[in-house]
Amino acid sequence: MMLLFNSASSRKEEFKPFQKETVRIFICGPTLYDYTHLGHARIFLTYDLLCRHLNDRGFGTDVLVNMTDINQNVFERARSESVGCREVARFYAERFEEDLELLNIRTISRLAYVSDYVESMEGHIARLLESGLAYVANGNIYLDSEKDKDYGRLSGQSQKELAMHRLDIGPNKRSQNDIMLWNCSEEFDFSWKSRFGVGVPWWHMQDTTVAIENFGENYDIHGGASELLYPHHEAHLAQYRALSGSNLPVRTWMHIGLLFAGGEKMSKSLGNVAWARDMVEKYGQNLLRLYIFSTHYRDAIDFKDSDIADKKEMLNRICLAGLKVSDRTEEGASGLVKSFHASLDDDLDSPRAIKILDDLCSRMIGGTSVAAEDFERICRVLGLRI
Ligand SMILES: [Zn+2]
Image (cartoon, rainbow, N blue to C red; front, side, top):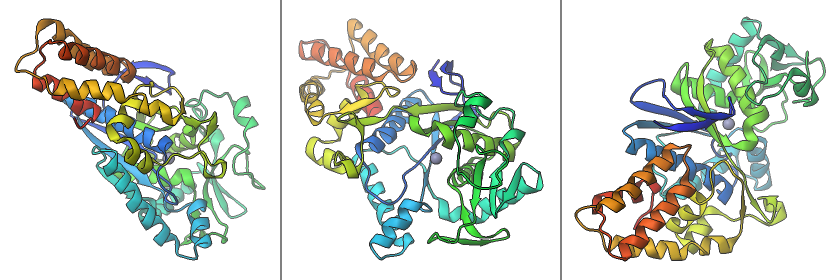
């Protein structure tokens, strides 16, 4: 049995996918205007670990990542470099795929470019207008949050609390926390000639359409950084409910803690960004994985370069243990092997799993026998190349 913490209920729940064999996961993907920093890498490494563990437990996985190429940051990058938006997006999409390769992330099955789905987005918005769940105000289109009695439940907010957040402020909105579906501004470098006039399908609707077009009426896990819970995921869920008619379009909401540097969020303007590719070059992906997985995925990490280096001794022990594998696992050690996998069953408790692995390796160096098969299985789940 596997337990996963579900942000929607704020507790650990027994995880059961909708379909028996395959777990379908949507991860909020990169905005294609820059390289992958360590905070982003942490997100994709965590879902890679989850998938590797699910695969080890006999489940198939189908992981969908949306590639955001319609976004203000992409437009601005294109303008500042005097190139087209598509060129910028394509360049950083290629870098993203290189970064996945460098990080040994092999569990993503589909990369979906949101610009390939604009026609479907238009269709979805038209359906919401026809059903009266959305309305037009000054040319923009909004989802009417008052028509959804569950709006606010995912982020645990009452109507009063929701009212304190004013989203996409605009005149004639019925409520200032209504979700924008379509922005009719012509100022963007990407604009689509739709039946509602020229404009841009808005951020949350991009993800919803990509997910519906790929997964249909439901899927098992929605993932992303914890900061996306509100309004992004709340909006996505409300839209999904409205379009699919399902009360439970997503089984589990799994949010990853942020990665800070010097107590601040990583950002170029603060000069505290660590790029994933630089970190792999400096330390290798094995060390990076041991470092990231040594903190529970729901906790924040305050990144220090030296903390990665501190994992070197542990990696040396793992490598040395790898040279001492035998053809059978003796009794005392088989309990540790079982505990390693059981830790990951408990809401992906990777810090505990890594401590158990370290203990196992120390014993192997001391002469305890562990079968190559058991040792390699652990390395495979963690994505370590020993
Ligand atoms: Zn998203």
